Image (cartoon, rainbow, N blue to C red; front, side, top):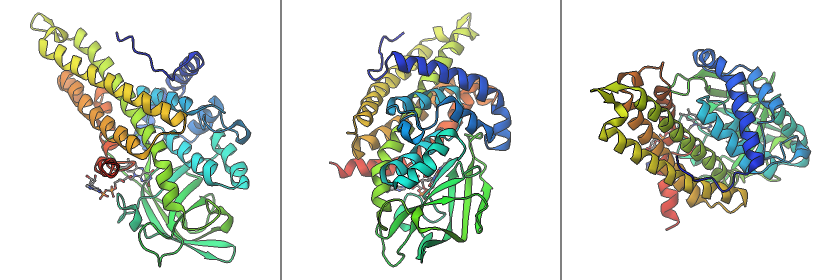
Length: 381
Ligand SMILES: Cc1cc2nc3c(=O)[nH]c(=O)nc-3n(C[C@H](O)[C@H](O)[C@H](O)COP(=O)(O)OP(=O)(O)OC[C@H]3O[C@@H](n4cnc5c(N)ncnc54)[C@H](O)[C@@H]3O)c2cc1C
């Protein structure tokens, strides 16, 4: 066993971790098969998570949050990844941080406590069918008409879209401007909202318990006061500033998943008998697992550096991009090596490693494809 201990973890966080782990084991894991079948979690999972205090852990208490720092978010995401549950709490946190950082006092008081309790579920809607990596090409419009915005367009691949009551929407408030200009973030309260429609829940390779939806906006009207920030046209800059937070959450899940993959594979290899010994006794297995463990630990040390930088507010875009790209690439490589060591069993969905492998793949694509991450790193050179 490695004696390495993450420097940001203290006794209080260990106690929190224990209760979060127990909560996922008792309240979420028994429902996972059902959630995978229906392609979304049950709505009451959100209220349970809110009551347990695992939503918005790093939002100040005065807005209903947990009042902790980013370390609490890190613990929740790690435990989620280790439990194998795909539950969109990271999107809830990301949207909360847009409101917290750029929102008006009224917006903070209206939405943050409801998000913390799980009474509202949040989605972040940037991607469109013709604009994924190229976010600047979005076509959804939010045009100011008196004291309202008139919204038209569509979004795709939206996590939490199925239950979302509050959508943080990236739209063009001035379509005459090209590139990053003229883009704003507008909050949409979706309940009973005329013109708003949730489309298909997409069938995916993995993460079956997490919904990924299409959203449609046809002449949707929302109050002009739902603009995020005090003036239009700041949306692109706001997204760029918040992305290191989102990318660190993805990187945290990556390291936790690789650690879990190694843990269960070591156990499998020690139990599996072959050629008069165990799978673990074969030198190839020992070397492969030694390599995986070494790389996971290198990843962990770099991740811990990033977590500490988020806590002290100094994580830069290039470093967050390095973490997102390198750690999710490594997650996929390690998941694949571990699946190989499970043999045919690893290819059956009865085995946890099959889910770890399938769930991992999208980590290299969403929150900015890894190629986009390398571009961002290259820009800093
Ligand atoms: C499960 C899932 C959940 C998602 N959740 C959300 C969500 O909640 N909200 C949201 O807004 N979006 C979400 N997305 C969308 C996700 O962010 C996009 O899929 C991603 O940004 C890539 O966009 P794209 O799919 O349009 O691929 P494209 O933009 O068509 O890119 C295809 C490929 O081109 C390559 N590429 C792209 N840009 C470059 C470049 N600059 N240099 C070199 N190569 C490049 C990469 O290999 C990339 O994978 C989700 C997607 C999935 C699959």
